[in-house]
Image (cartoon, rainbow, N blue to C red; front, side, top):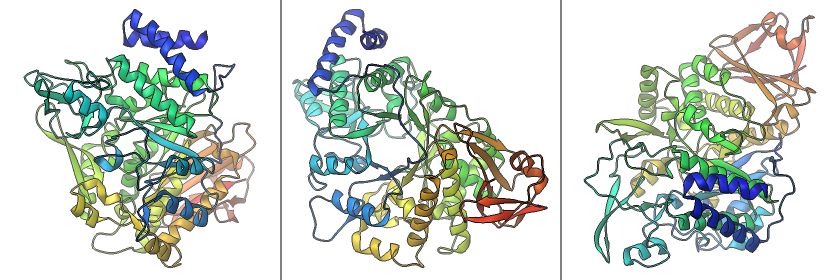
Length: 577
């Protein structure tokens, strides 16, 4: 009865009482249909540890000439040959039939795109890794059966979309695009205008219709039944719309997230719920709720802050942000990453860096061959919402190719990400040090294509096996760091984190294991010069008695801290007593 009461509580906020009560029975019916075992305890928490790391990739990120079927198998083969067991989880970006936005305009939520493979391929991968997939919940393709039925006034779909009067004032709506908020479409009833937050091919769904919610609960359970264990709620912040509001982060949106969390907590699947909300930090962490919404939230502020710190050689803003991070609720943690299939979001920098530093990042991106994408504000002005550049090239020296300085900065950024409290996420292009894919931008006309290269198997293997190639260097750096990380409980997502002030040239923090059996001091020199750290400044870690030596876990060697610890430019150490 506890589950039914929780679900009913959320549904009564979202809908009227009678509708809510009827939905409870229908949701229970869906659970019975999928035959999930019900947990006796209703306080389920994920079983994550220092072993966890998630690789993020498109199913067809690797292709081979002449092969037009089962492309997902090339990724599977590559991971087995070159990553071994360095990662235990894989996020396959949308692998469904889609009409645009690299999979995020879904035509059919329950089919695997024909060239990628079949559900058996997905289930095979799920048998080897904890598999993560996207629930593209805010919108669907205009070529989906639902939308085609809407145009013909047929079920299912007739009432699944939001019609709006184009004369209504929608200036309060917050959205990350400059395209029109509504799109004119022909229907059997004549011309109508529908809500389109992201593009005219991605039609927003109307969750005020409970049938839409039930459709997505069914899809959610279907994914779990296929062995998917981490589900990312894409663009969830924009789910609920109300005229006269910002239509972002509305109360009913949060209750929908709570509802999905209740379902996860009720059934025995060891599933994890993530929310994708690329917004300012305080808004982002609101999706933890009171420990009753997302298990994990993305650290969207981390990529631009790390980039800023290493390019300016000043840790101030990164350290201030990290030092003020709230402790996640019990059973929740952060998802740390530095790049994704999208750009580097800059809205999450709001309130964290001064405006002139914000401008510096935009100019630096352009100097390094990248782009800046803009959104339209309510007053008609435009402001940046993301930087489009590969994370590797974001650290390049303008006008020079793959320098030692670029590599040092980049590796420093990646080891910091791996060290922070939470679960690390590694985008495939980061794993192999991808350069800006300008050919993709020109071909598709989308700035985000700069970081979405599709590799030929032959080229990729050639690069990762060439010891002088950045792809080889970075891949092996990652493998080594991840394998060391897995051996230390201080890197458990629930291990404590405390940021230290060792000056603006350094970014330093400690990680302390849950049972206090281990403490690791992470120090990164983010400056392009040698930095000497007085041993006395490390006494809170080394202890009150003078300790002359500590072990650097990354290099597997003893380091002297008396009278000082010497760090080379952009060097990071993991120090253990």
